[in-house]
Image (cartoon, rainbow, N blue to C red; front, side, top):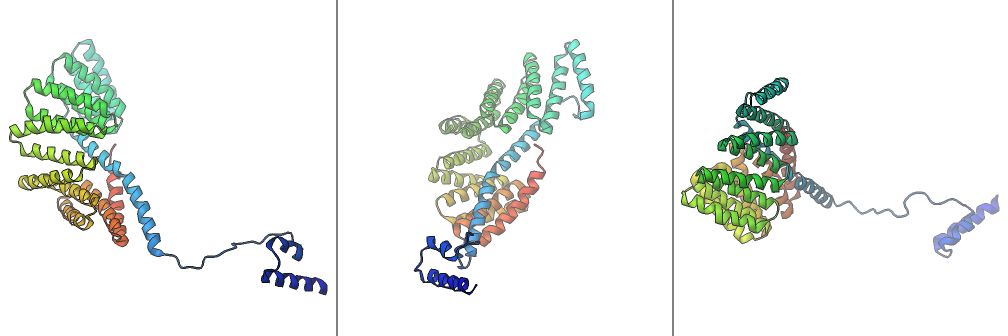
Length: 357
């Protein structure tokens, strides 16, 4: 027993002194087992600033992924506005759907195309508001076919507008463009130049969504802007400038984007258009961030934030809070970035909960 203890003590001293190599240890102590636990422990203090920075980075990645929610929300608002203006046979309710089916068959027997179209529109509005886009598209296409046979141009415009909004919401931009082109032809035949110009802007937005920059620029500069200018429509010109700014920003042509932002801001102030002014301030701040002028960008975001709060523009406020978080992060102010992103998360959750589609 005493000899074993002596051998063990000698082995420990040899290992500690480095005389014995790692591979020889087990034979000296005559133990088959392995050491348990970490071989090396880093006792250096944790860098809390680095951890905070990493956390902010993860939250910004999530925020950027959620940016599509805001686009979708705005598209939903536009769709619902169109649906509320659609001519229907009555307020669509689920309990009335069986009755509508019977009425539709009766009108088919009577060859009453106008009444059939009203029923089909009613179905389209019902499914559109429920978020069932394929069903809504089906019924509106059927309604359009009847409106076309009746040569009901205002009715065709209304249904085609609904289809365009539904296709855009579902990301089918090429189909949305076809609806835009149909609507432009109808408005031209009715000599409604203001509406023609408006639809050219919608077409340009869909082209931009497909990254077809040259075509989008063409429809804004060569089609929409000249029409608005000839009519003296300042609001229309302002919207053209907004779209051009977004177009050039997407192409990283920041100087041109900034110039059109400035023009938009000036027109928005003249027209007292708060929503357009907020949008312009947000966008010029984005451009300044891209040019690494973060301090000035923050000034514009704060102006936009105040206007959004005063006018209760929730969607804009969500966007601003998220962008402010990103700006503070670029400035290295992680505490302020965290506070802004906390507000963004709270407002974003509230906004998404109220989204129908």
